[in-house]
Length: 269
Image (tube, rainbow, N blue to C red):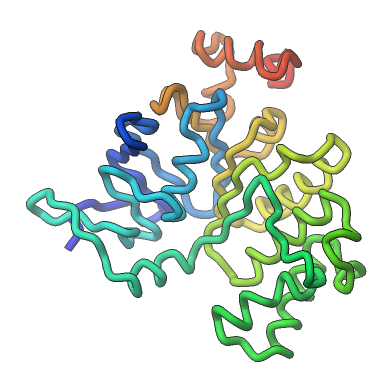
């Protein structure tokens, strides 16, 4: 049905995507390819549309126009040869979304469940995995994020960094092909930020396809294969870290780096 195509090595292809909330257009005609097995960091000032773009990739928001392909399959809407957008069936949407895992700014853990319970619950209820097998898979993911010894702890007994690592393990337990991170360290202090970024670095080293919305410029410069810079809902720059951060820089990016949180972020790249 879809006349939109993507390269075989693209995990996500975004084609002419726009998004409006009422009369406010927050994304303007975005075209973006996310390569398989690579890390793409999306940076930009607050209000530039970064999180909205990520939520559209997960179909938590529906793009007003355009098409998003996940591993070559349309997500939510297909584009017919005549140009008309056609909404796909709920079953097909669920199938395509099943390849995507997502972590948010807030951990959203169930307070009445242990770390093990939080990670295994979706496997049992949404995927129908038997309890013993679900808990075995959950333990494997807790081990991957360094929290095997905290499996029996409740969220209130865990630090913020540990809670976010449980959230990452929960997403990984469903074996996604793509991980989306929406500012996963924004609510953490610097010490706890480091332990979450280490998990993300390890995932990158394992070849996980990742899209990371983040203000962690050092992480973006050192881990990302590609950088995407959004400004006022438009894709202003994209390329390798060397291409985007290399001097002389685009004036708008230089302004963003110099003023970001008054920390002189331009010195980090």
